[in-house]
Image (tube, rainbow, N blue to C red):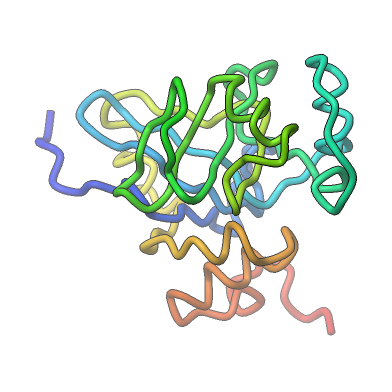
Length: 188
């Protein structure tokens, strides 16, 4: 087994146009952790038909007024799709948070949502249901098979852009126009 020589923590994975897996076709995934145990990431550009207000109602919390109520919840990946994951800045000190390079927090404990309901949550956040996971060596193998492009993550793509702009923005970080890669080129 080859030793791991690349760490894609705090990188975007950009699905190549030929990606056949419906879970990942046309996605950008933020890699929260990558080590010899495998990798964990969240798809950041696939909103689902649920708002934060709906999610909070389901878990018995009331979300105050304002724009937060209307924020979409995202499909984070096909693993544990019944579980919420919160990507946020600043990292903060929640019960169950993984710090990603001290830049972004990934929290799975309910205390962060309780704080958001009180108006005391992190200044920037996105909530997903589910995550994407790879076994040891699996992600490296998929990259070797040209399933993904990778680029260092820029948090503003996650937190400041609408979901439909995140894929082109991640491609732009690589200096590539996504339309030029598309396998259905020729459409104006």
